[in-house]
Image 1 (tube, rainbow, N blue to C red):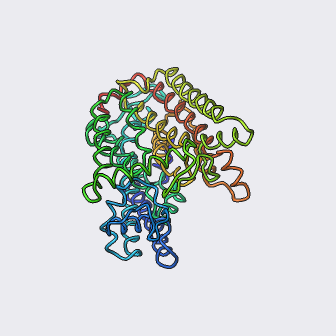
Image 2: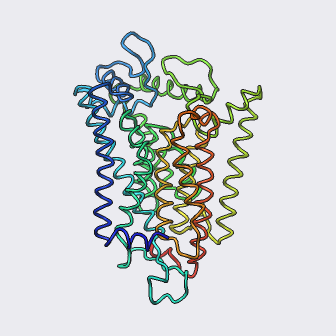
Image 3: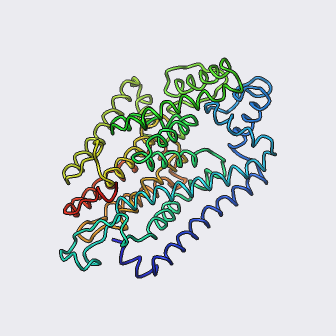
Length: 451
């Protein structure tokens, strides 16, 4: 779809690559610069919680308690505080600066890696640009061949980051961990087939910061990638217990107990909680479908079982629709042997489902949608004339707008989980457009080139 446009307006591949690199760096440096100004002139926002937890652990105290014995706002597993202890030797402002630069670098690498893999999955050429393909609208998979446009991954990375610039800015200003989660997700995808042990280590490490990454374990099992699944579990156990070398087994078990009880309280399974402050599933700032449905049922006096039933029905309907749409166009997904385009659609589904059905997802957490954004852009950059990308573009624009809804309606929008419902529509459009694209090029087998 965008092939002729990029040739007409953006010049040669080398020029496009340079422009994309410059754009990506400028966006990240601008966000990092403003975050640094905020940290030095105001305060270090959420990073202060991590810094104080690391400083407490460095001095032999609990990261979950303040100096006067009250609960702190640190709710993560102890690994993060353990790993950040070197920063506690610096002043809080200097530590925040290093953390900001590391976070920006993580966004850069995550965007580039997912863009490269998405481009490798979807980089086709229409017959209008390939003389030996006489049939109009047919496709030729380029893979790693000489005809591949190496500027496309950089363009995808830059545009995906630009679409997510408000979330990038928020993450850097707050000093949050979402950039690490992005890089962990991307590396798990990147290494899943070729280096499953490294993929498992990436999953285990990021899950030791936020449990969200554990969604990869059932996915690996579904794909029968047992080495990655086992490596994920072993790495998770290792990194969760690693702080015990400093604090001891007894303290480590107490810390892990606190965080696990915090998760139970989040979903309402535990009403009392000491030391760790965890917000409930109905928290008004959560934009997930799960939170929206729990808020709806509790507001109408319905039992939580009703919310759980609605969540399961919504989830089942989503997955069934994606499977039916893909198979209707001859594309098998979530199977053991699938080609590159199938992997892209699986990854997009995994990310969207993880965010949308999480017990708690704020607007900031939707930063991980950068992954399906990159996949959507890879499809649009290579879409042939015989396949329309209209609905994918509309759903992408709607989702970008939905994650930055105007202030007068933002409270109602959050309560309804509007951004998450838009993410589901985007995922369906992505699956439909990608499947039709693969069907249009079904006379060419991309699998060998991808492997």
